[in-house]
Image (cartoon, rainbow, N blue to C red; front, side):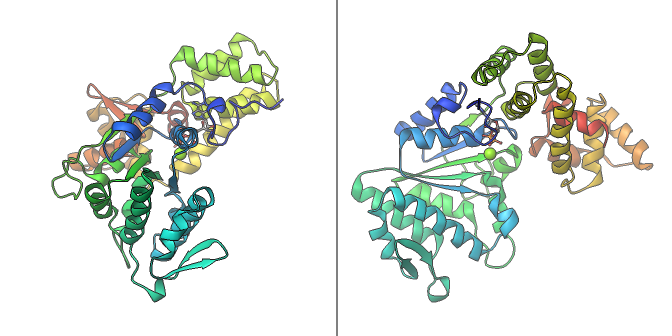
Length: 365
Ligand SMILES: Nc1ncnc2c1ncn2[C@@H]1O[C@H](COP(=O)(O)OP(=O)(O)O)[C@@H](O)[C@H]1O
Ligand SMILES: [Mg+2]
């Protein structure tokens, strides 16, 4: 039997989502009484997309959803941006057809059948024009429209290069002027997202703006065990307590890994498979860590994973491996970036790797 909880895709409906009542309530409060923007922080695989999906579906509020990781593959250029926007608007109008009447009025919009397409060659249509129009629709119908951007830190790459788009400028304009739009943004690279939005950075257009924030935490041990038990129960299967504990010991309370392990173990109910499952998880992480831009980042992660928790011993380990001395600034920069990427965190002067699978992989980097 298939388990809803162990479905490896981001969850969509409430009955697939374990717990997260607190986070869903925070989003509901935000919708009803909150500021114009909600920021959801949380490391990779913690459940941000799932919570966002479930919220948007449950409330049935008109919304646009953009996963900003598509630009990584398809390019940080205006063509891609307008294509992604028109796809998102097509989804919106398929549920809320009256919005089409408003979008039609925009210059450079082509309606093919009922499909919206932007023809940017014929017009100087801007992102704010589009948001203005959606807002107007919201105002005239007395409804709030949510614009959600998943992994929004990626939008920072639109700022450089040709035909650039400054999203923090657009956001601050919408924040001040478009009362019927509300934004929800998420980010796994929490420090990067924070820097990009710049609520605390005086040069940022969003500086000092009031916002709502929620940080998604991992499940505690008891919830993790309960999650696994419920998931296996849905598969009609009762593995021994030691199996559940072995999984939780390896992946801690990170829902994405609990789900992945449960899903795989449900398919092949042999305790010997558990090693292989962890190896698969490590392979996924390794391919992600390969994207780190410099050798120093990998070595610093390795140093932390091998138990060097303090700044000084991380520096020593790195210097041995690269075989020359490094400046304080180089070490600080490296560690700061790893913190901003959400890979390590600093607690009372000690660095720790946030994800135990990452820690395992880092030992072998
Ligand atoms: N509360 C939850 N209940 C059930 N499954 C979850 C929960 N949170 C996350 N998952 C599962 O974990 C994986 C990662 O979740 P996702 O929402 O994609 O995380 P994120 O967006 O933070 O990277 C997915 O397979 C999802 O189904
Ligand atoms: Mg996600």
